Image (spheres, rainbow, N blue to C red):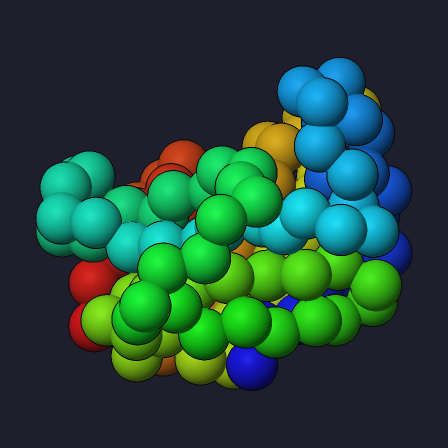
Length: 109
C-alpha cells in the first residue's frame, strides 16, 4: 500500500488536470528505476492504462498504480508534497530506504 498525503493529493489533482487527466478516473503511476546517486530513483507519471503486472491502490481518493517489481521497494511509502520557498516538490517517505541522497530523489536498501 502507498499512502498519499492531503497536500500531495491537492497538487496531484492540479497537475493531472493541467495535463488532461482526471484524478477521479485516471491514476498516478509510481515506480523505481536504477540510477540516482544512491542506486535507485523514484518515478512518478500520470496514466490511464494498466499493464498486466500492475497493482492498483487507492488512498485519499487518488488511484495509484505500481508494477510488481517496484512495489517491493515502495510498500509502506507515503507520497507527500512540500511547496513554498524551501519546498522540494513531491517527496517519497519510504520506510524501506536505508540510505537516501541529499535531494531525496534516490535511495538504496
